[in-house]
Image (tube, rainbow over all chains, first blue to last red; front, top):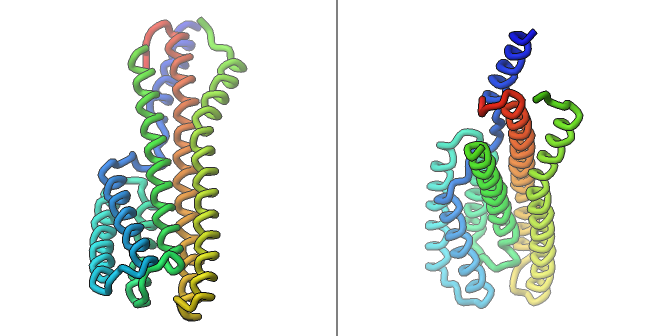
Length: 146
Length: 109
């Protein structure tokens, strides 16, 4: 009877040990920083465009640099497992910059709403991953201190 | 020490719910911020068109961009829900592990 009880507990223990859920990639600080830098650059350019102070040269520079940054981010994000949502969102962001560039008008706030919304969506993904990573670290700390 | 199943279920549910609450609050804040961003954008679009700063083609372009950005919003919601589910499940498993360790009398896991 005692042997059976121990075997049940042991097999449950093995099951629990193997059953840590992972549905999203861990938080990556570099991705978050690059994305924040890109958002700052974009918002600065939009403010300049609203004020009529963004030259055609500056606009082209913004789009070229933004596309380079998004492609770098996409390459980095694709290296993590369970990161499909972020990679797809970055592809959408790349498309938003390309569309704005091809449209040819100055990126005023009235024309850049879709782009700004997509940047916000990617920031939310970072927030969710960061909260989850902090939570997981807390769980591991609690378990290891027992 | 034996495990009381009803207490264990109650504790696991409480841990899972607590873990998901933070994500739920984040999601609400995000959706409010997104709705405000779109609403402000539409107001600005109408103002810029009225002031002849942009053309009808620009208006159509901007609306199409907003429409296409909704796909990314779904991805953000999906990632948040997955993170919430992950934390909820792991929190519940941590409670189960703790109960098991207490039942066997040593840190088996």
